[in-house]
Length: 162
Image (tube, rainbow, N blue to C red; front, side, top):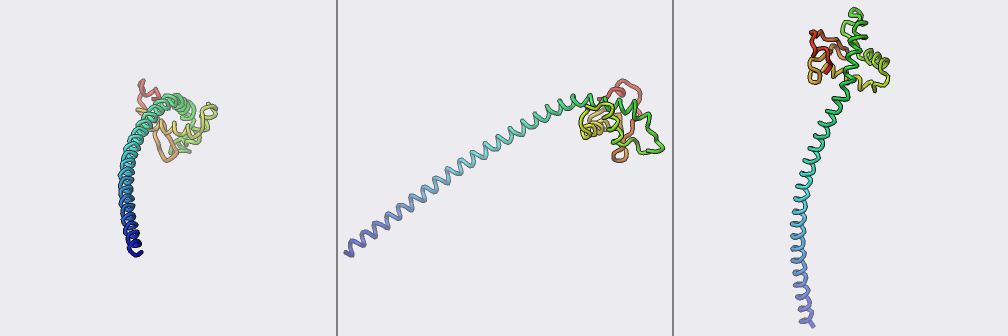
């Protein structure tokens, strides 16, 4: 009986060793499979991020062109209002820094009630004073919130608002 018990124990021990080896092999296979799919996922994710960045850049450039053409009318209306109405009524003695943006926006909203939000008008006002958008800019910044009309030479470019 002891001989049988020893044989069973030896058989069980070899079976346990075989199972451990199979489990180790299965673990190695699963690790290699997981690393393959993780690498592939990383490559796909990188390709998607590159594609997304490119699509975002294209969309932003297209929307900037749309906004540029759409807001050109608002900028020209705003410049005409400043040039024809607001600037002649400006008193340099009472406001030496220039015309405050709130006065310009209020006058613009009275003249064009459907023009949009005051924030949009403020952005267009800043664009009129920005050299990157208007060349040459018809307005100049003074103290924060104050604008002055630039003294431009009379030329076709100076009279148009870009």
